[in-house]
Amino acid sequence: MTDPSPCADRPEKRYWLDEPRHVDKIFYGLVGVCVLLLLSDLAYRKHATFGFESWFGFFAWYGFICCVALVLLAKQMRKLVKRDEDYYGD
Image 1 (cartoon, rainbow, N blue to C red):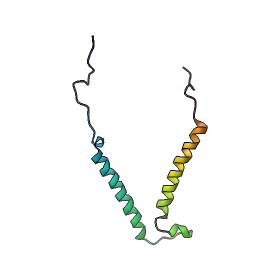
Image 2: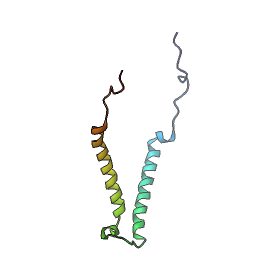
Image 3: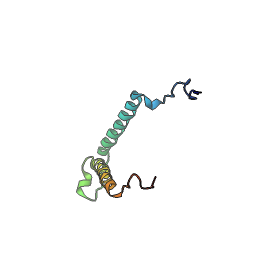
Image 4: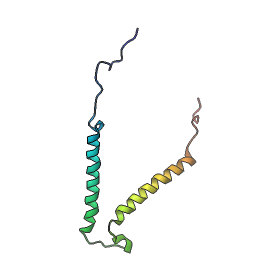
């Protein structure tokens, strides 16, 4: 008595993000938005408290470097706070 699985006769449902061309469109769209935001840094006068805040693209680079630092820090913190595989028992 082998029952076929209920979805054996139906084709697998495909989502629009399953196609690489759609993922590429999103990626290049985000890159375009980031470039436009970086170029908009030239369009206004900055009132910086510190001199380095007036550098072109300072906050973009600052955000990127801090994001990378957070990921690297989290990878190191995992070694301190992770639990054993059998923490909850059998």
